[in-house]
Length: 193
Image 1 (cartoon, helix red, strand yellow):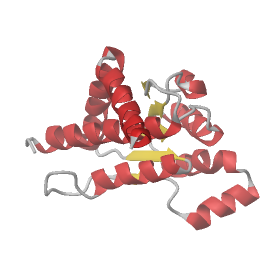
Image 2 (spheres, rainbow, N blue to C red; image 1 turned 120 degrees about the horizontal axis):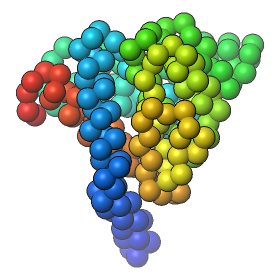
Image 3 (cartoon, rainbow, N blue to C red; image 1 turned 30 degrees about the vertical axis):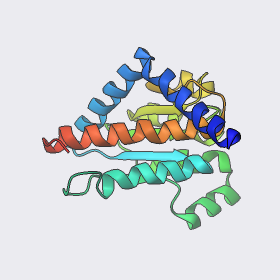
Image 4 (cartoon, one colour; image 1 turned 180 degrees about the horizontal axis):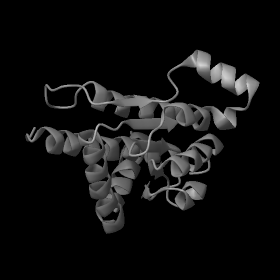
């Protein structure tokens, strides 16, 4: 029982540090406004990640394209890794490092938003996608751990969770993502859930 309580307490401590971090809280508010405005202007939101962060990216995209609290129309959001034929072809023919960058070259448009989830902040395929996003006028949002890693220098907005522990970071990424989804839904549709 002690180990279970220790793990729960560690998760709570990271969230308490997030709650006290005004910079991250202000960035969450800014990202909420950016995404809301992007949707209002007919733009799309893309998500990318690797491993558990890919699952989290897919989860958050579904909150927009499906629903969060409000029964409403779908919002244009998608995770970039869901086409396995594309991923395996580009990974094989080019490199796994360019799977997101190449897709973004084809479908990304100025005014869109790209959210990359990387606990280390050093995922090469996400960094390359952010570089392409910059060239195309796509706003970039990095969800990372405490240092921000290399994503820090290529992110327009950095949501860096104050932890180096991957599970604790991923738990907080979902918390932050859910906050953004709820607030965007309320702002876009003009309702309180």
